[in-house]
Length: 339
Image (cartoon, rainbow, N blue to C red; front, side, top):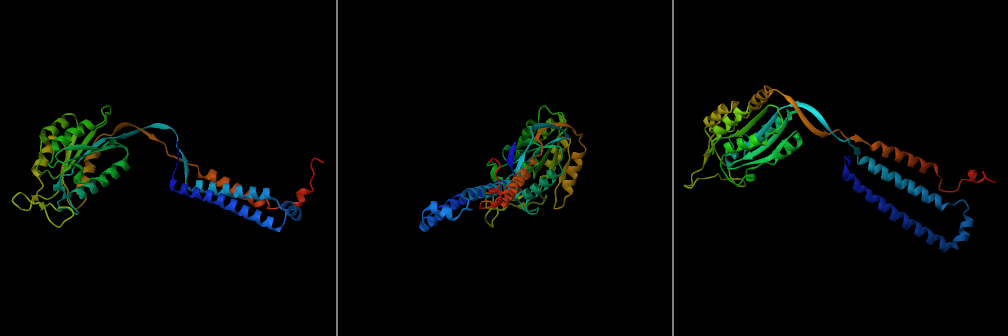
């Protein structure tokens, strides 16, 4: 596979077209100037050492050298064929609550952003593992299928917001069931679910879903976001807070009891997040207890840099331009090889 590491530099190739136009303009102006002095054939006799063909050769050598320099800085690369790389790891499905209650600011900057920051740091610690991402509120949706592409995982993670799921609620059971269906069926590696939620207004039989996961050997780990005393939910784009039908400010509280019940049913870890990294460390330690088994991942091997080919060509062309004189060489004119 061939590609350019810095394809934006290829726009500089437009300079080559401008150089051709400029060269043609200068050539036309030079011919017109000669015609004003007299007949071109007579003028040519007055300038016996002039060599228009050498001038053309020098221009095209310089033009080609500039083209090679532009291609070199664009970073041409070649990659080898797709190959199977054996890796030892586990599979992890992350279920992230994106309901409006996750906007509460009893964590800095709020529950959802704190969750995303924690998951981003957790992903940085993965090496040969596979990770997938599910978002849920009143419904659950797969945001990223299980993959070893951590860059994509972090990119999808950064774009998550409550508007992604229009139906409000906390469908924990649906999220766990979707996670169970999202693992690679053919993989024998150990698997884990990390569910991050405040647990408020949960719907569905989350405990039964966690038990079903545990029966399949998949641990359900819960991270509780928020404080038990609760906090109001800010309305984005305003300085106001969400209110109920009676006009009272809604205070969302962490349902810690429910989170603990789900974690116990799923034979996993429950930890409440705070403004430190204690929850992250607990999750990392829990995942480290799982046995890493062999995973098959098809990846492209690293691209090989090929810029030096064009750099050498540019150097050779510039040297040739330097040694070719713009007029006829008097020494070579005296050499008659075939007389």
